[in-house]
Image 1 (cartoon, rainbow, N blue to C red):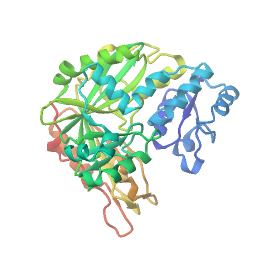
Image 2 (cartoon, rainbow, N blue to C red):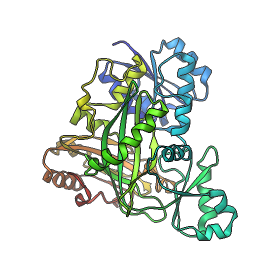
Image 3 (cartoon, rainbow, N blue to C red):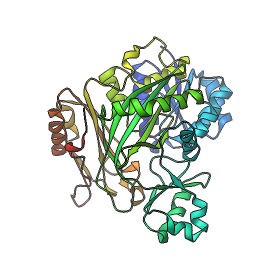
Length: 428
């Protein structure tokens, strides 16, 4: 192909863009402010630079001197504003506009858009009034969920259980908000699903609906996913009652290309409410499963768009752009407690388990998972991706993985939190 792709960002997730690019015969160049020893993607790219994303002029010069054909970023909302400006000034394809990114990277603005189009979302309290009106604060139905309006990955998200805790929880969330804007929502517990969308030349496709499986509660922090399973048993309900409103909203916003995910909660009233969103690639790496089951890979489509201005330049069978997957597919997201990783065992045995497609490590021996990672996706140490035809195989695969894989600390103690109980997987 002989094309050159510039990747903005260098963390371990950005390695996925490089793996896909290599399969497509595309050369990769990685840049951001991180030194190479702190940048996994730079270690495997064809070339790398330490030019900050904020140095727009420097990156434009890099594009010129390296004869870059396309630019891509993923996995972090904060990179999208730089991506949009770089593409605009370089005259290269950008899958979204600055205005679209501004709405879809800001939880407050996005929720307003949902209400406009009848997309159910979680109701919220007036944060300023909670801070300044004691009567209003004490009338709130605790617990509340406080979160920065413009951050992702669980950073700064806090469960506030009483009026007395509100001020401290507010300050914690505000630290993680570039605009110092904090949302205060009713804390709802219930089942979760994540909807995945692909956009192709203005057409909107629901490409997957997964049950987002939640692990045991860690004290004082939000619950983290311990797995995703496709297709969700809630798909008929979602397609009938939620998808039409969502599709109208995205059509009205003028979304043309790219991918998007929406995380939703189903409370006691059985209504599916959106609580988080990302107009970008997602760390759940669902494309690994979708490529295996329906032959659609969001990362490869995004690379195509960066290089050619089309998600599917050779065309795509639209029957594959469906959330009704024919096989069972799931990932097991293995979480770790804080501490120093001393040893990892069983990694070499995972590939030998029938049904395991592949796996991805986020952390390795010698690394430290700090206490401040509690409640954030930095606790994810491993994702194992699995596909099977029979429901009974799910239990077998999960149990085999649990039996062979472990990470231990310096005292020889397992650092891993429990994975999901297979009875939690609601599949057809």
